[in-house]
Image: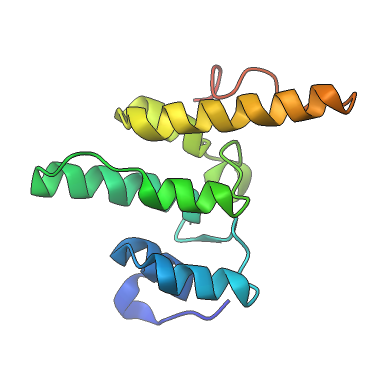
Length: 135
């Protein structure tokens, strides 16, 4: 994980790629060993994606998107992983509370698929109801 200095608030190269919506760069970084669940400045890549997508929508008036979120989920990001080194909220909770309904619905479908896969293998996913009791 290579930091990019104080100008970006301590973000890693992957966080800069998320901020810029640069999926090609983000993909290359993940392909070369960046952890899809890495955290910088108190945000995982997935939390950062939810934030960037919401900010872009609000600031530009463009339709809400979840392209970065979807990309990270496809690469194995965990929507239940809590920010702040495990002391914060999950990206699922963040999307719900902040009204990123596209990301929230995507997370729910992703988790439902994981549950179905676990059920078919006789295992269950830990964690109970996703995001329902987090603060």
